[in-house]
Image (tube, rainbow, N blue to C red):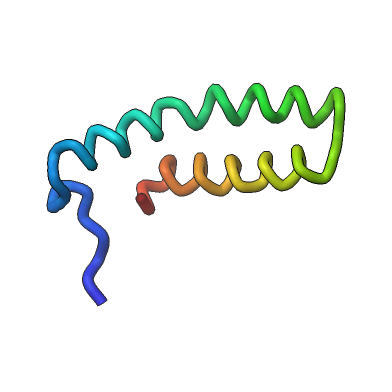
Length: 62
């Protein structure tokens, strides 16, 4: 199976990935604060998904 290469994608897809990469950390921090103040099962699920996405971008898996 071929590795996912960001630079093989069309330019508009790369731009979308860059925008999502820049936005995930502030949304993650906001969701962390919200989960600490008003915890619910949906907030915990969203926090886990955002944490996974943020780590995936940090380790350059995406």
